[in-house]
Amino acid sequence: MLKQALVVAALLLPGVFASAHEYTIGDLHIAHPWSLALPPNAPNVAAYFVVHNNGKRDDRLLSVDTPISGQAQLHEHVQSGSGAMRMQQVASVAVPAGQDLVFAPSAYHVMILQPSERSLLVAGQRFPLTLHFERAGDVTVQVAVQQQAPATQQGHDHAH
Image (cartoon, rainbow, N blue to C red; front, side):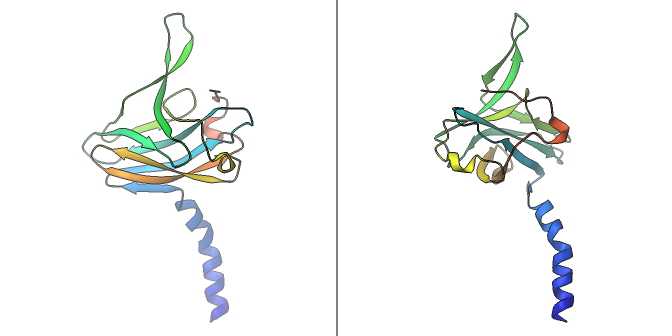
């Protein structure tokens, strides 16, 4: 009997890890928060994720914070008049009903300025990030630090 229970537990374990990196609060579902490993001399790091709004009402991401830095900001990339891409801070980001809000390289992202817990910013580690939504409220996610971007976002890396 114990052996059967261990076999069942072993078979279920991958599913636990797969779902552990997705979060739900109200109608919002946050999928795979991630960040690239922080190079030794880099002053800042970015975090990315996708918010699926499964509801019938818009929401808004108002702010973010993390215990690894005194300052985390919402940013976006915009094209300047000269055609060059530049990064700028935004006050909040709309999460339209029935749609996805994508935080990805060269798009919206969370900028974590001068992190104090650099030991958590190596591949294989995770760090907490709290997202503050207007309607859904607050949710703390674990950001997975990776050596490279997920396959769906390869080729879009940027440095700060």
